[in-house]
Amino acid sequence: MRYKLTFAAGLALGYVLGTHAGRERYEQLKKSARQVAQNPAVRNTAETAAQQSRQYAGKAYHAVSEKMGDRVPDSVAQRVRSLRDRNTNGTGGDDWGTSNT
Image 1: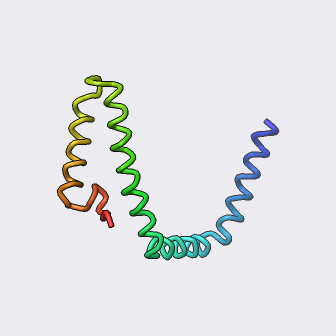
Image 2: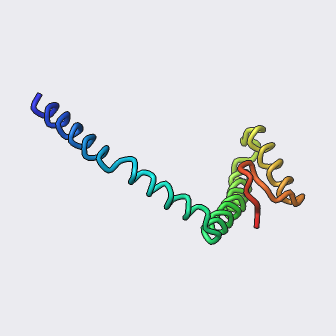
Image 3: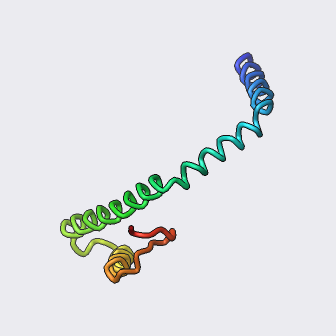
């Protein structure tokens, strides 16, 4: 019972202190996060990481499929083939609307 009361008191104190600076600080953090996300260097790095992860996923698929043989489900194999075909045909985008630049 003592721990429940201590927890409830801490929760109430945290709520009161959090709401004191709450909305203003939240807006500051949101603005900062938006600025970082819109930075061209950050965007390029994120797109490069996404492109590299797609390449590594393809390599991993080949390594696994060589060892697994026909045990890879057809749905997975078809999805990987469609992604590979789409990327080699030069569409340059993925399901999230980013480019491969």
